[in-house]
Image 1 (cartoon, helix red, strand yellow):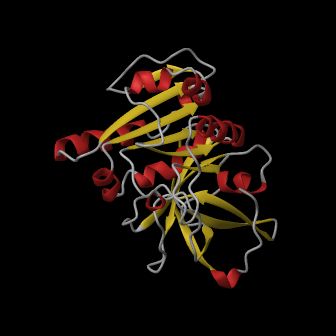
Image 2: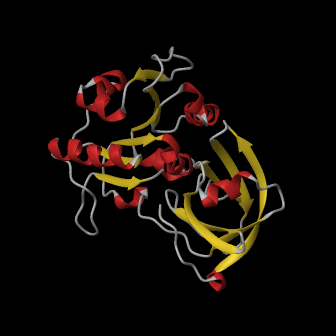
Length: 266
């Protein structure tokens, strides 16, 4: 997501609350949330940091639940990146600017109908789905929720405990939807199956093309029942759009239906 020129009077100064370091490149961070700040699960915030006396702005998908009093984000540290280099140095209490509006159209309410909801992600593209899966309505609306997270190495599979907890809580509450969790790695051998998580080896687009993704999950992707989101590496998103079109699915457009929504995310 590109840098934005944002006037400071359209933003509030918040404070960093905490940072969780998944690896040397992946972090989760939380900031204070203004009482008036509203977002729809799947949307993103524009955040600002002071770097060498100038404001630098970046967009990050919100990963915290809609009702939480804090805002959480999942980020990759880009080598020599102006924003992420400054972000890496932050400590609790340091200032972070938050634009007062939330943005984005990757929200479940854009789907008119459907039974199976597929959430396809690479890397930190996982972020929007973390808040969507904490939205009670999504568990009532669909029969099957399928989260596919593709990464290069096993160490990049963040949030797995939280996702398994959401799945298990839904089972305990006997919610209508079933959550299927799929992990896919490209640079390391296939993971062993654990805790009911399907482990595959290969790119997400390849797994869709060769049929192994649907076969392992036990569901077919089709225009009648399936609704999909794809978020992550722009190359993956571009290829995924074409694969879905070949299957007769179309992108969601305002007042025109559609079966899939995509968003580039690094």
